Each structure stands twice: as structure tokens, then as C-alpha cells.
Image 1: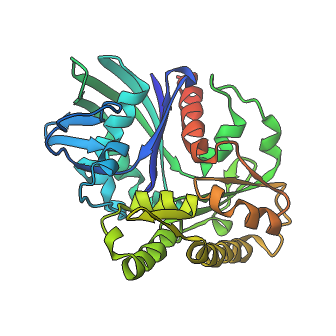
Image 2: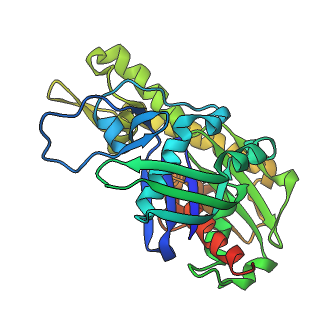
Length: 330
């Protein structure tokens, strides 16, 4: 099987099985609490490994468990990171045994330092059990290709789901990618399908910065909401509202100023590395979940920017298509 795995500090995404299986869930893992006495909802996502039993994603967020949402680059070496990987793989394949050719990514700022570490972490045989299945799954990762995350957007457009090059004209264009995630923003410059280091960089000023400002507001004005998980606050940011003891809390006056401030900072960084109007680029590709928050601001500043359809999945799709492309060359 070929697979694309895109870990983000907000969501984990993956794609496989001919492109028919794609998944996304919050990047949150906690030790599994006791089972609920009654549930009328969907079955929870629980992953059992040699290190223990874990709740993953939405199940972990909803249960109200106090957990650590890690943001350091060393998380790729943790058991929790592997649990996210296992959950993603169990979403895209039901098979008892899978041999996997994997493409995954790292933020631009972490790539040179951590690519080899991540490759070693994922390479090899992994055994785990997903709650509700009668069998352990064994995933043998026989190849791991690690690329800078923003490259996924280029690969997503260049290739199709069977690994064919469908946009050959991209090889003759200079492109930029603005990949806005929960923690990081990747600024990638590509010319002739080769990245340009002088015009490429990564920063740590993404959507979680908005969450922190809103959390500070809620702690000061609505202390009863201090048990909200970070992911729940991000959901409130998107909706511009939350609820305190049944009363609606309007968040627009808190969210809009910080969105404008961070958006301005993102654009200032882009102009610093790409020029005031980014005129040398044929187009600027915008991807990542942060595209939903800053799309209008970016497109106003750079009219030749294009938000990729379902921008949160652009890297996962690109990684998967590249895995299929590479497999066709072996």
C-alpha cells in the first residue's frame, strides 16, 4: 500500500487505498479513561499499543480529559506521535497486515534537523489494536520519504492519484506556497520543481496564537470555561462564539483583531522573502487549515494567489500521490 501521512499540530491527516480513503482528526492523545456507562454516539477511537491504551482525536477532546497538546519538534519521537500514526493508518486500511510505502512531511524549519530522526521512527514493523476490531493490525513500513510540508501542495497539483504527472507546465513555472498550520507557517519558493533556499523559510506563528489570545480572554471574563480543550476553543474561534452556562458568548471582538494582526505578520514575512508584490511568481498556492482564517487577507495582498481546494488536505494528498509516483519507479 502507498500512504501519505501529514501530522499537524492541530489536525492529523492521511490518505491511502487508491486515494479512496482519507482521514482527518484532532492531533490529541490521552490515556484512555474508564469506559462510558452508556453512549448513543459513534464508537470512540481507542488505540492499544505495548505502551498502553489511548483515546485519540475527537474522542479524546470530547471526553474532557486533561492532556498535553505538545508542540515541540521532539514530539516526533514520542509514543503519542506513533499513536496518531497508528490511528491514521487504521483509518485508511482495515487490513490485518499491510506493507507500506510512506511519504510524510516536516515543517520547513525542522526539515534538515529532523528528517532522518522521523524516518527512523516510522521505518519498520508496527503492531497495534484498534478498539472494536477483533485483530491486531501489523503495518510494515518498508520505505519512508520525508519532504518539507509545503511541498505537498505542489505535488498535489503536479500529480494525480495514480502518480501520473498531470500538470507538466508547473516544471517551467516559479511558484510560491504559503502553508498555514496550527503552529507553523511554511513559506516555500519553487522554480523548475526545485526549492529556492533563499526564498524559503518557516515561522512559528500560526492559528494556535489566536487560540491563546481567546483563552486569555475566556479565563479573565468567563472563568467557568477554563476546562475547554484547545481544540474546543479553536472550534469556537471558527464559529466566533461559545457558550457559558447556556449564555452565548460573542467572540468576534476578540478574534478579529488578532486574526488581522497575525495575518499582517504573515504577509510582512512573505513580502520580506518574496518582494512586496511577489511579482516573480506565476502563482502563490495557499494551503493548510489556516487558509480558512486568512484567505481573504492573503488574496487581497496577492491577487495571483490560489487557495487549493480543501486546503487542509493538500499536503496529505500530495504526499500520497508522490508515494504512488515513487512506487511506480521501483
